[in-house]
Amino acid sequence: SSQRMVDGTVRPDPQTGPRGAGYIMYSETGRMCAVLADPDRPKWKSETVPLEAEVRAAFDGLVAYCGTYEVNEAQGYVVHHIEMDRVPNLAGTDRKRYFALSGGRLVLRPTPPLPAGVQEWTVEWERVTKK
Image 1 (cartoon, one colour):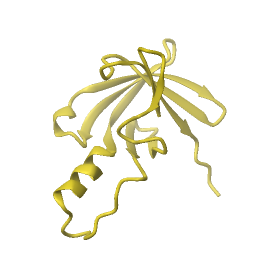
Image 2 (cartoon, helix red, strand yellow):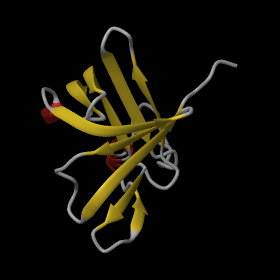
Image 3 (spheres, one colour):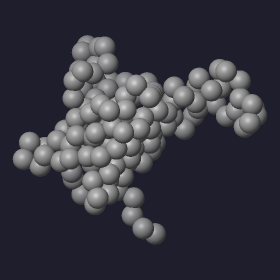
Image 4 (spheres, helix red, strand yellow):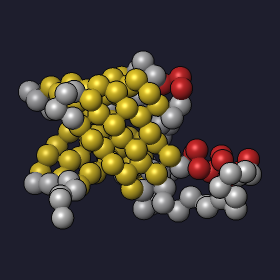
C-alpha cells in the first residue's frame, strides 16, 4: 500500500509500513473481510500481559474490517459496507474503492476524504492460489 502525497513524493502506508501484508476476501454471498498489518510490529514480551506501548503499536499497525459489499462494474468501483471494524466508530460506514483487475492482481484506490496531504492512495492485492 502506498500513498502519493500532494508534493509528489510517495510513501508507504504509515499504518502498515513498507512491508504491509494482508488478506482481502470477497464471498459469493456478498460478504467481504480485509485484514492488513505491519509485519514489523514489535512482538510482546508477554502474550497475556502486554505493556501499554506494545498494545498501542499492535493496534496502530493493524487494519481490520468486515461487512457486505456491492460492485459497480460500469463505473469501476466497489463499496464496502462496514459492519465490524478495528475502530468501533467506523461500524455502519461505507468505504468506496475504485478498482482495476489485471491477471491475478487487484488494485484498490480509496476515494476522498483521504488523510491530510495524501493525493492518491493505492492498495495492491495479489490472488492467492491453491498449492
